Length: 110
Length: 530
Image (cartoon, chains in turn orange, cyan):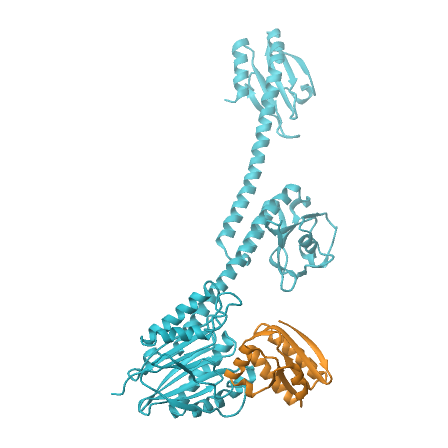
């Protein structure tokens, strides 16, 4: 996995490329937490280039969502492919996140 | 009779003239007879022994010829006294080179014997060290004995063996001779001879007073021989420690021969150190393997027997952890009045952390399930029991718990984010028992339950994501549909046959690839009410 951090106004965007799994989830978590400590409050994770998320990866997203909420911010997701969308639905995780079908829609929703 | 005796005897038989050869073993030693008859041909007093060449002495019994035997040893040939002057002079001419050759040969034999004796001592030392090292798996146990043996052989009264502790970069003394305990030496110490020899891999013969260092002072008396302990590898060698010897008897310096001998022993010691480490690592690995096998057995014993629901239901289940232990589990409950409870769960991640959570879940559900036939109530109680643990460990789990009421013809389920929960019907169709809530540990809300009709020919099929995520290559995921296809095709068979069929599919798909995640499957068919 590799990820890129971008800014769009006051929204910090993390683009995740490849898989988000047990072996690399802490890398993403650490970087997001650094941005939160640096003042970021609106965080968008863009999964357009993400092929797979395992249960540990899902756990990190939920953990980050809690921490951002506690900081007075909001974590939103965008561009889940069909498999990932199904995974979120089957596990009811879609009820825990605001998920947009595109980055633009997600940015508008903040 | 010696060779020289034989020659001198033959000369006397031929000429009637006696002869003898006398020699010194070392300067200032008295002369001793090497051959011949000392009574008939005595050695003359010192002032009558020529330093070289020969002299003729006139005695009352006739002429005595005394000649210096050429060679490194002080030796003389004495012929006569005799009245046969010609025989005496001829004898000197003939016997002198023969005597010189015999004495030279004797000297060479003597040197060879001395060399052999010394080599024997060294070979014996190497053999002894080999035996000592062969008997032990701990260098520390043998180090003092080895150091004593080496020191005695090369005549050292002080010495030490150091072995590197790479975790802290220190050379630690494992044996000390002739001094109290020594301090550790840093491998990068710029002054200590020991550290330098360790770093350069080259032995040093240090002269008396040279390269003094406080940490080595207790064993320094005069010259010091410092030799690296090497473990030979195809790449050249890895330094493991250093042998230091000092305080040689007589104050003599160590020789190149001493260095060679100690280097040979150091190589044996190095091999033993490495073997000891390998043996230790192997024992630790074997112990770890035993503990992992024990942990696996213990975890499997936490799972209920597959016939727990008999006679109300026919159930088959299998859990295959990706490591020795894992976070996938199932549980079965007979709830009375024709009702059975079936639970499957998957704790996030796998390995020991997951296994510990799984063990907590098994004990908690055993209590809560018997308190209520309502799956939502059981799951709610389970969440309360585990909430703190899940929060602290940042873990969560998907759990699906279904209660089948045979009398009422219903199945009621509470599904906390578990994606693979199905009913496979008698007609071959399948219905997903969809998640009613997010996975446990992600939200604090109480879980919900849903119900639908249950028929006698329905199958309950629960599995964890390790089964559809099984991969034959990194990108070739098995998927959910083929698993359901096997179940549908075998829906009329006994549950254990269906479980076998699914695992055969999974194993066939993975081939040689190891499982990435734990795998669990439960298949259940209820029996008719009596």
